[in-house]
Image 1 (tube, rainbow, N blue to C red):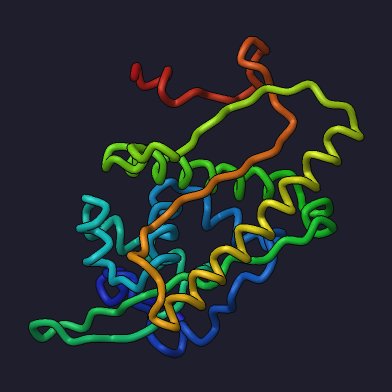
Image 2 (spheres, rainbow, N blue to C red):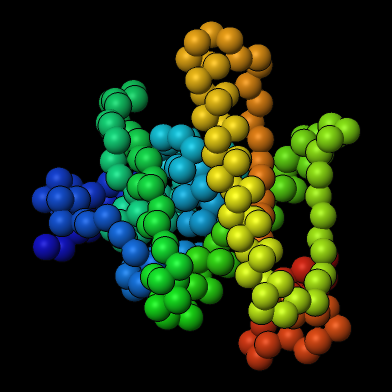
Length: 227
């Protein structure tokens, strides 16, 4: 079925097409790499993972052209990363509000079997979100608390050391989940204090030292842009 650009100008697919769109369930799906291939799509996904929004609302939040945002919303929907949650009528026009699907869960086995291009696409998108998340939060005073924390540590580890550190971080993540559940329980019981939005980032990876040559094709955007 052919859809004119005018009919689908704001990323709005008719029901007959929308019903053919399936959710992405693993990172090996080629659509996942395509979906994460543009920085604006990554930013749109980050917002739609937190809340429901229309293309108009997204364009305001991102300070981006409505036509460009609508195009990427359409692509994300076609590629199966977001779903239509509701429709509203505003001054005679219909606005469609989208929400991101839950991200594909990746087991250690699935990660090991995923093609490198899929892994790199996912990591690049996540690093972009971390960059945007951290810088905006910093500008808003997010690191002003005395017990806020940020650390970058370069280590030399053998296989046993790596495995011990990885296991230690998994225990920390499990404890984080327990702490958050305790807060939910207190909130449900009306016993929680004021709730703040809190960011936590953990990364463990084989590092390329700053003094080492960059991989072929790698470009530091800040240097390239003269920032």
